[in-house]
Image (cartoon, rainbow, N blue to C red; front, top):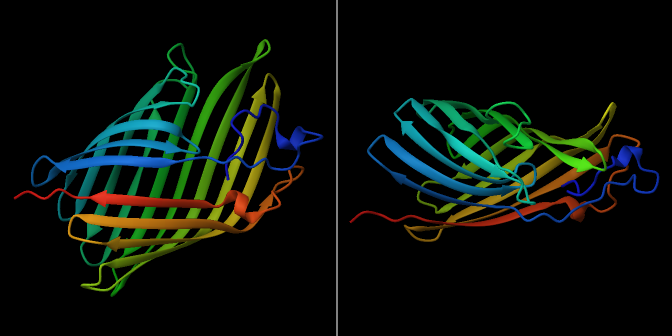
Length: 264
């Protein structure tokens, strides 16, 4: 479910290409984290995302029994190696062990949206509430990610803004001493691209009810594998844009490996 990166005219304004043009997008994340002390740790993350494109972040986080704080800088760049933008990322989690947890966080580019140092800006935000119950951890969350960038079209500047907002409920199922965790997700997402050229402005919007499944297997003490799938079950486009014909053109699938190094 990704807008074509080279599109300069809204599907809503196009006479011949009003149908959503799906675009195969490869995404992923590489994360390295380690402890600096009993309560302090660091995390370095390189990530490619269909909304935020390419980013690198470094954060420090402090954890206690009831609180967890994470804070640090990020640098982001588009696929055409444009001038990168920099910003701050952070989150706070309040925990009542064995009962509930609440977290909220986000990120934002520093300075104005566009200046001589960058032609793009990005913002994220998320709030999540969860509970610990026997064999299950249910949670609800709201998140949004957006990227705004400019490109030159003839003698004018075209401003594009991609935004994905998700409302999600999840449930993690686990059994003590069983090395498998299953997470089920369901929710509603709103995916828009806004086009602004001079005084003309248009917006494409694709909406979907989706479901997801993720399986995590602890193969050995240091090795953990995960695999997931997210499928838009019911989707629609705000007219005059037309929704894609085939469901399988807009699914999301992932596979991951985690390896932990233990001290002797």
